[in-house]
Image (tube, rainbow, N blue to C red; front, side):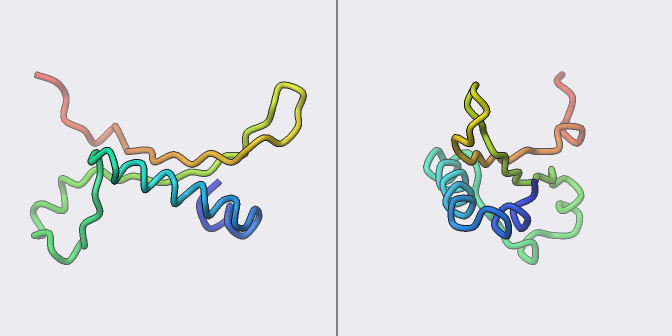
Length: 82
């Protein structure tokens, strides 16, 4: 589910999961946020869109276990390897 739905449905548990996922990306220096207004229009076409998804995880017995958040990039927009 998308972030807004997750926070509306699951509350603070979802919010913590989203913050943790983004913080992990920042700590690893594998991603950083940029204001769109600072990017020239020609370079905006090269941006690979991404979405943050939130998923409820269940144990093998079917009991609710945790909430997991994941940032997923639109890989279809990446350059093909040379």
